Length: 334
Image (cartoon, rainbow, N blue to C red):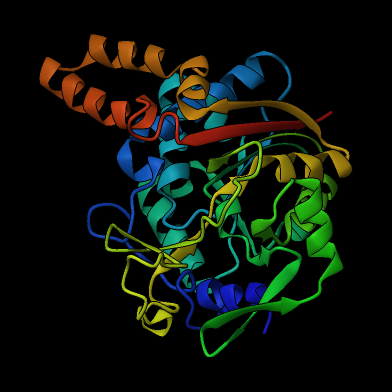
């Protein structure tokens, strides 16, 4: 089978890794910005409010998270909107795009327990089901979970019994590899369709996404497995144990790769959506007001609590943690 089909089954099959609820954070396979600090969602909430104040978003706008998983990120945004401008909770329409029924159920229960009927929440299985006039879209670490094809010196990979062979001619994959100057590595599948779906779902919107990667493509493979906070390269070097059995990790652990943001940028430009900016996460969060939120906290809580939250925020913005490794990309349709 194609590698993209293999990866889809690994992550999204009936028994795939993302098909059921997975713990993230200390007890899970990996950390995310969401699991590190509530101020990640809080900063996005502050930015959303600024878009209302600037007139880009209406008070009746749709706030849509894609790839929500637990619902914690959206809950943090709602909590800070309530703190900073509570009247917007009565007028915003909150939406989650989530294909899996089990995760939808978990998200509904969690958000209902947290906010009850104080918010309007709707679930859709895909962006193609959503139609709105004005929206803010947010996605955290979604593009690294798109299936990809593997490419090596003109040939595309296929998978047999968890073994990878590079012997397939695929002109589309080769054209993307040539475009992004790759002679080997991952070529994401689905960015173009996703961008078109979003463009068709709403007349006027802003979209922000955070992920790890760079604007230009990496010169080598970055595909890797995450399990219990350990990183296992999908392709092992000669100095490592070459007897790793991928079948032992299949559908039981996360599999991911570095994002080529230039590919995302091109997909959205082709869909008629304007590229606004690309920044390191630390710069983006500071520009959107994370430090101002910390100042508000400092004025209203004990010093001990402030210092605890400050340490968590450092994980989001310090270069040695998520600050430089993760990037933000922002688009607008007007």
